[in-house]
Amino acid sequence: MSNQKNSRAALGYDQLAAFCRDTAMLLEANIPLHLGYADIYGFAAENAPLRRAAEALCPALEQTGRLSEAMRQSSLFPDHLCDMAAIGERTGRLDEMTRELSVYYDRLDNFQRRVKNAVLYPVVLLCMMAVVVGVLIWAVLPVFENVLGRFNTSAQADAGAVMQGSLLVCTIVFALLVLALAAAAALLLMSRSAKGAQLLRRFFETFPPSRRLGYNVAVSHFASGLSAMLQSGFSTEESLRALLPSISHSVLRARVQSACEALQKGMPQADALINAKLFTDSDNHLIAVSARTGAMDSAASGIARRYDAVVADALDQVVAVAEPALIACLTVVIGAVMLSVMIPLIRIMGSLG
Image 1 (cartoon, one colour):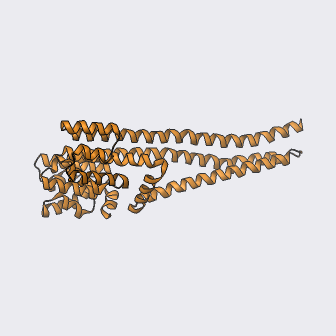
Image 2 (cartoon, rainbow, N blue to C red; image 1 turned 120 degrees about the vertical axis):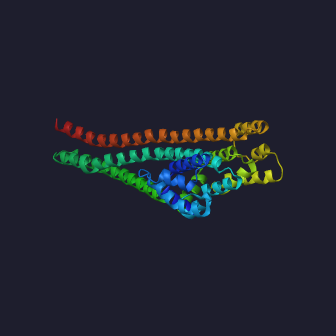
Image 3 (cartoon, rainbow, N blue to C red; image 1 turned 90 degrees about the vertical axis):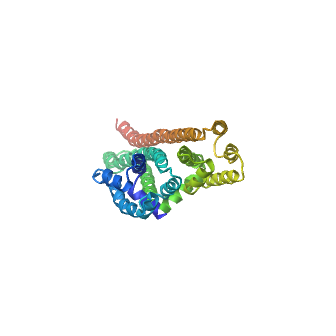
């Protein structure tokens, strides 16, 4: 768990993808990794995290000659990457493994960017709404209240009551907006810690409106990892067992475990995956066909791309619904306040006439 926490602070998914890509190229060129890292990252002033990672890796690489062990000692890389590197070293396929892992982390980076964009826009709208309502409370309504107070008519009492009601409504709306922004800030702080991120992930997986999306996200990551393992030359059973520790979604983890047990008992790979109910019916058809043609790696890659698109569409829908809803709420609040100001003013002007 500490590895995961440190890796978040040191290397993002984009940097992990770049590191895996550089490692694959060094291995394919038969360049010793400690010399290659020192040459590539030694002058990388624009990418300090990767330079620090190279500085931590090179001494351990010279001593042990094993990338996986050097990464574990540095405490800068996620456990999943260390485990995959160890498998690649044992099988002599480290170059293929790191090349496919670069694709895997690129996908995770793209997903992370989508989530940030989906969350950022509603938060910006909430901030704008809070500013507008705050201006109404402390700048606009007091001016109108002073103007109405100068009239000595029978409608003045009613106008004052309406103004007080408008002020109360604006205050309640402002308080709700502040609470929403405070909740968003608290969730952001929680996501930066390993325990907080785990709690948020569990809530996301079990909360009914987000349960389906949570499973699709987990399957997208799993299918991407499965594609990377299969394209590196590993069998389906080896791939599933290697990926199992990195799966945090409880339902998906249980289904993958079921598929592993079925494969261990000798069940054909297509039947094991289909019976485990990992994917949809259309995906299961693709798996059945690919198992007969020996193209399971291509099938896993296609499934990963499809789930990526499904998750992207779901996030886009969240933004598409949140934007007009927040704008409509702001319009209703401002319109109600303006009416509460203008109607009493019109009544007073009519009584004077």
